[in-house]
Image 1 (cartoon, helix red, strand yellow):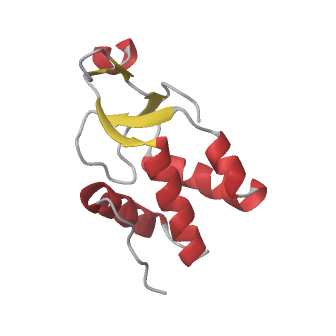
Image 2: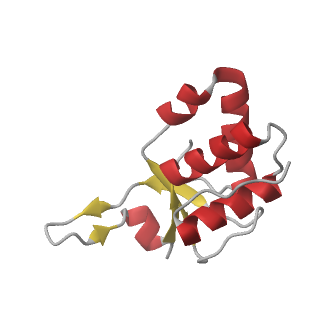
Length: 120
Protein backbone atom coordinates (compact mmCIF):
# COMPACT_ATOMS: atom_id res chain seq x y z
CA UNK A 1 0.00 0.00 0.00
CA UNK A 2 1.40 3.36 -0.96
CA UNK A 3 1.61 5.63 2.06
CA UNK A 4 0.63 9.29 2.33
CA UNK A 5 -1.04 9.47 -1.06
CA UNK A 6 -4.66 10.57 -1.44
CA UNK A 7 -6.80 7.55 -2.28
CA UNK A 8 -10.31 6.17 -1.73
CA UNK A 9 -11.71 3.06 -0.12
CA UNK A 10 -12.84 1.98 -3.59
CA UNK A 11 -9.19 2.04 -4.73
CA UNK A 12 -7.99 0.26 -1.58
CA UNK A 13 -10.65 -2.44 -1.95
CA UNK A 14 -9.76 -2.85 -5.62
CA UNK A 15 -6.07 -3.16 -4.78
CA UNK A 16 -6.73 -5.83 -2.15
CA UNK A 17 -9.18 -7.70 -4.40
CA UNK A 18 -6.66 -7.75 -7.26
CA UNK A 19 -3.84 -8.88 -4.97
CA UNK A 20 -6.08 -11.61 -3.54
CA UNK A 21 -7.21 -12.86 -6.95
CA UNK A 22 -3.79 -12.76 -8.63
CA UNK A 23 -1.41 -13.68 -5.80
CA UNK A 24 -3.54 -15.26 -3.09
CA UNK A 25 -4.52 -14.49 0.46
CA UNK A 26 -0.97 -14.70 1.83
CA UNK A 27 0.11 -11.86 -0.47
CA UNK A 28 -2.67 -9.66 0.93
CA UNK A 29 -1.26 -9.99 4.44
CA UNK A 30 2.35 -9.46 3.40
CA UNK A 31 1.45 -5.84 2.60
CA UNK A 32 1.06 -4.71 6.19
CA UNK A 33 2.01 -2.02 8.68
CA UNK A 34 -0.48 0.63 7.53
CA UNK A 35 -3.77 2.12 8.64
CA UNK A 36 -6.37 4.19 6.82
CA UNK A 37 -6.86 7.73 8.04
CA UNK A 38 -9.45 10.31 7.10
CA UNK A 39 -10.57 13.82 8.01
CA UNK A 40 -14.06 12.35 8.59
CA UNK A 41 -15.08 9.61 11.01
CA UNK A 42 -17.14 7.83 8.37
CA UNK A 43 -16.12 7.21 4.78
CA UNK A 44 -17.92 6.52 1.56
CA UNK A 45 -16.35 4.52 -1.23
CA UNK A 46 -15.10 7.66 -2.95
CA UNK A 47 -14.18 9.75 0.10
CA UNK A 48 -10.58 10.90 0.23
CA UNK A 49 -8.44 8.97 2.69
CA UNK A 50 -4.78 8.14 3.24
CA UNK A 51 -2.77 5.09 4.21
CA UNK A 52 -0.04 5.77 6.74
CA UNK A 53 1.90 3.94 9.43
CA UNK A 54 0.40 2.73 12.67
CA UNK A 55 0.47 5.29 15.47
CA UNK A 56 3.23 4.91 18.04
CA UNK A 57 2.23 4.07 21.61
CA UNK A 58 3.81 5.99 24.49
CA UNK A 59 4.55 4.69 28.01
CA UNK A 60 1.00 5.58 29.11
CA UNK A 61 -0.60 3.63 26.22
CA UNK A 62 -1.55 6.82 24.38
CA UNK A 63 -1.51 6.71 20.59
CA UNK A 64 0.87 9.16 18.96
CA UNK A 65 0.02 9.64 15.29
CA UNK A 66 2.67 10.32 12.68
CA UNK A 67 3.48 13.94 11.84
CA UNK A 68 1.69 13.46 8.49
CA UNK A 69 -1.55 12.44 10.23
CA UNK A 70 -1.29 15.31 12.72
CA UNK A 71 -0.42 17.96 10.11
CA UNK A 72 -3.41 16.98 7.95
CA UNK A 73 -5.89 16.72 10.83
CA UNK A 74 -6.63 13.07 10.12
CA UNK A 75 -8.13 10.43 12.40
CA UNK A 76 -7.76 6.68 12.34
CA UNK A 77 -10.49 4.94 10.36
CA UNK A 78 -9.31 1.30 10.20
CA UNK A 79 -6.17 -0.81 10.45
CA UNK A 80 -4.71 -2.84 7.61
CA UNK A 81 -5.77 -6.04 9.39
CA UNK A 82 -9.39 -4.90 9.74
CA UNK A 83 -9.59 -4.05 6.06
CA UNK A 84 -7.71 -7.13 4.86
CA UNK A 85 -9.74 -9.51 7.05
CA UNK A 86 -13.00 -7.94 5.95
CA UNK A 87 -12.21 -7.97 2.22
CA UNK A 88 -10.80 -11.51 2.18
CA UNK A 89 -13.80 -12.63 4.26
CA UNK A 90 -16.16 -11.08 1.73
CA UNK A 91 -14.34 -12.74 -1.16
CA UNK A 92 -14.39 -16.11 0.61
CA UNK A 93 -18.15 -15.82 0.94
CA UNK A 94 -18.85 -14.29 -2.44
CA UNK A 95 -16.15 -14.09 -5.11
CA UNK A 96 -17.99 -11.28 -6.89
CA UNK A 97 -18.68 -9.18 -3.79
CA UNK A 98 -19.21 -5.55 -4.74
CA UNK A 99 -17.34 -2.61 -3.25
CA UNK A 100 -20.62 -1.55 -1.63
CA UNK A 101 -20.87 -4.94 0.12
CA UNK A 102 -17.25 -4.65 1.20
CA UNK A 103 -17.89 -1.20 2.67
CA UNK A 104 -20.98 -2.47 4.51
CA UNK A 105 -18.97 -5.40 5.83
CA UNK A 106 -16.12 -3.14 6.98
CA UNK A 107 -18.48 -0.74 8.73
CA UNK A 108 -20.25 -3.70 10.34
CA UNK A 109 -16.92 -5.05 11.58
CA UNK A 110 -15.82 -1.65 12.93
CA UNK A 111 -19.11 -1.25 14.82
CA UNK A 112 -19.60 -4.86 16.01
CA UNK A 113 -16.13 -6.45 16.13
CA UNK A 114 -17.48 -9.42 14.18
CA UNK A 115 -17.87 -10.27 10.53
CA UNK A 116 -21.00 -9.72 8.50
CA UNK A 117 -22.54 -12.58 6.53
CA UNK A 118 -23.15 -11.61 2.91
CA UNK A 119 -26.28 -12.60 1.07
CA UNK A 120 -25.54 -14.87 -1.91
